[in-house]
Amino acid sequence: MASATLTEKGQIVIPARIRERFGLTPGTQVEFVDEGGVLRLIVRRRIAPSEPAAGFGMIKVTRKAGVQRRLSEFDPASLVIKGTGRRK
Image (cartoon, rainbow, N blue to C red; front, side, top):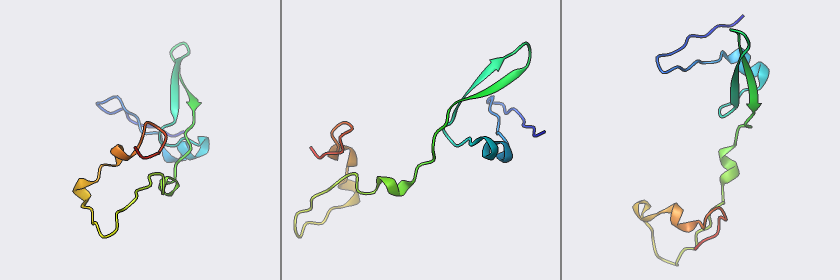
């Protein structure tokens, strides 16, 4: 049986074999249930890993011909209207 050590912050690293076997990925929500002095870990919500490439093209920027932009001038948040992905 696999074991883990509790850190000073109260964190436990679940061994890789256990994570793989039960499909536990970063962001998975779990619940701890006390059953008469025995702790049971229940998976409440699994989170599928995301692909960074899936977000490519979500923000469209129109450029003026011949005008160069500096990275320091770019504010991606100003291009998005709450959750719609449309430009202001």
